[in-house]
Length: 288
Image (cartoon, rainbow, N blue to C red):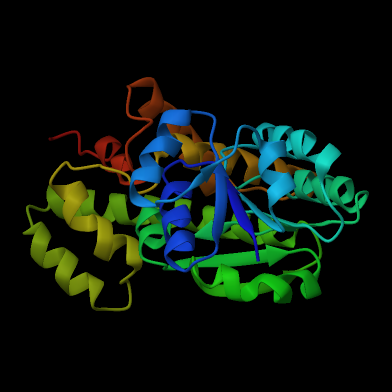
């Protein structure tokens, strides 16, 4: 299946490499041409399309990996005039479920399919084919492309109709916010108790409170290293989507709302491009 990818950011770049290694990548498009040129040094030969529409005209399957709802809307608007029937668009971005449903309707008007398929696993997962993909849309369309998607994701789970993938990703992002709060608060407490943090991380990580974030970010955050990972500003964007969806459902999200406030403090201090474990910066005892 002729496969293209739009968006070569922190996630899209390694996804493109894995598609190329598996023999699936037909072409790419990225706003900044220099990034696509860099990819071409690792994936040679590589077709760099002149526009999203030019890429869509060459491909049966198009992956979108951009940052926000407006970006996805723009990409669909640009591709729509040339979109061939039976083309499948897979959006791996994190956007609102309402936007996903609207894009699915637009794409369907051309006889094509739109799957909302956000991913979890961060940059490490993208590099190591360790992503988990949660998919909304037409189940039959997913089965047509499952083999291709297995080149970038270790788990691909069909969640239901359009918007279901994004709703599931919102669950993931809300949970990630709570885990971030719990781990950074607990390790700050351990530091205030003057405990050896390496030992705390080791012993707690092997027990009932163990989790991926503690095991993969505990040592780095306690040594003041905050390389992403998953950027504060991006998680802030995602949590804003979650709160909007929760508001429509009349559901309070107090931990999420608190995390948004904390992230805004970090972004105001210039830490928006750091990993979300930078929340540890704010968790200090008054005695420290």
